[in-house]
Length: 122
Image 1 (tube, rainbow, N blue to C red):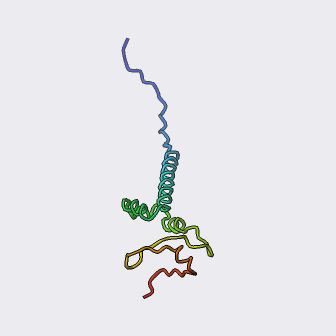
Image 2: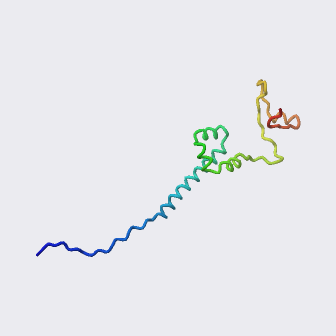
Image 3: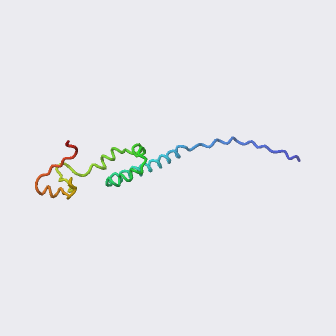
């Protein structure tokens, strides 16, 4: 008996199909969830007092914030406030120009009408 190799006819192996659509969909979903988290973080940060917002923004790569989120729209809505026309101004107190005392809005409004002027008048 001879020991010659026996060749068997094998069918060609079909190439593996690449399943790129599910991978792309999962990747897009992960990026979308990360983007939503970033936008939610920025919204919460914009609602904070200016000092806290400035602290967060000082650690942020600035172009990323403006390119990755609808920054201007979020900023306008976050800082809009709750005052409506006809509402009483919230009470505040400020130091006088000579820095010897403080003046509260409530103390001025008790004496009569108060006009608040914001901006330059020079």
